[in-house]
Length: 542
Image (tube, rainbow, N blue to C red):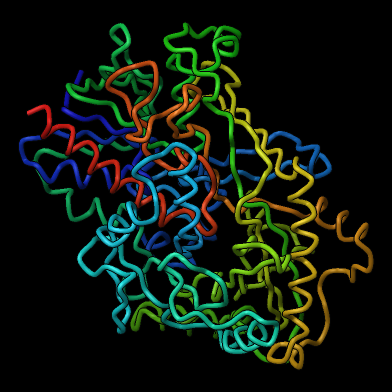
């Protein structure tokens, strides 16, 4: 047995922040346990190295969702980072925060203290802005390095012009709470290398004697004495187990897929479901694992008449030249994220806020060829100059669920996305697909198009079939440990788990509704907000 004041389960985007912030007090002992490895290495640091990480069981949980009737019974790959840094060490590095109204809606739904004005300082606190210009919406004193793209795609100006031609004005910065219009994407990098939450927050804190980081250690279940969480039983890489005791609190930061599963294995969840899996009920909390949120998306691709990133990475000399640029100058294609520019748009003019996010894609993959390795989302680069656009529903109405397959931590959870279970999301994506066609045909891009890589869709019925046949997930799973003030919420607005003591959930699973954008930035903010809650309570208790 080992012991600390706080035991954190999961070293992802929120867990890394928690461990760093709580261990700032030298009188507080913090233990962080992580199922994966260190989150270090060449392929993690190099932005393009994601192709070596996704689908690799050493760095990715490699989940597969259940067949989903709403997308014609397809099974989607449900990738999730399995290392320190979590998704921030594995994903596409797009940084934004969503709409002011996203967070104001959280507060209106019973989450006081989570309005945009309340959470905005915590975005600033965590950020280390790398841009040359100063903005009131960015912070320079934090740990999470946010940067403009060092080597943007040569077609970004054409995409921006096409968006403007289609009625989407240029927006200089998207981080102040409004996202109407088009902007150049921001990324979490420092000097051309990925700055995961682990690299930004944990690395500077590693030398603290009061912070212990234990990797390759998977949480089996939370240990309770009565209704109080007092520790975590965990499994080491060699199969042996250990109790990690918490004098103050256990903090679950394992992500929207694993956090509800850990709660359920520990006896917190829908009572009948727990009993059916042989788990003794500690607290009957029927919404654990429910309210699974995602950003459903579709994409369209075109061949173009100008060179693009994928056409400049075909020959061995091209690849070698880009590797040398990365190694010696920390720039070039290998530092560039997939998403190069973003637009917030309305698919109906009467909507109060943008209901979709349009992403301009710098790398186009040839999906007619076999995928690279086991990861069905990573294919060889297309041989010809090409561009792509994807579009996702900002606040989807569809809801899925996470459930136990068994009480054995070695078994993958049951993931039922129900990605397009609500008709309104299908209709939004049909309108959004037509918006992509309009942008592509607008001045800026229209004169560059050579051919299309998807079939031409002429009717709404054709569009709906295309949506259901091709829609994917944004890898923004959230909501499965919903925050709220009502009795059915899994956690309260201070992120304390209802029905027990000494236990919080701190990650994207607490979101009552999805934000209108990528989720890494908001998840880092949740970690900062939770650390402040915990410190304030500790001071109040003396």
